[in-house]
Length: 73
Image (cartoon, rainbow, N blue to C red; front, top):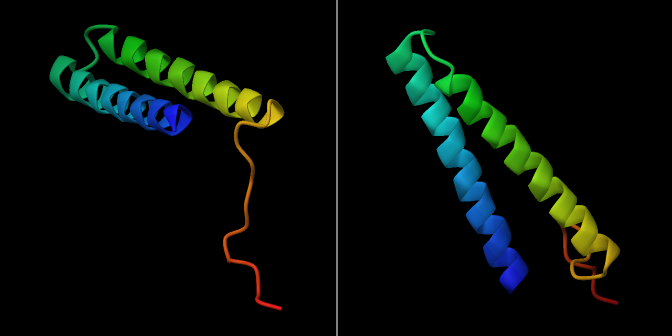
């Protein structure tokens, strides 16, 4: 359960960073480096989340499943 909450929180922070990058892009009109910093944070968080998910899979904390439920026998 903790892992699901952590993934959800990180995804929210990634979306916030993406939104702030857009905000800085519109407001600063290219005169500052705040857009680059916000998007760099987003990329770092995305890579961190990917690594976290791969480690969780490697340690057996999460398991893949199919989209459709198994057919009854």
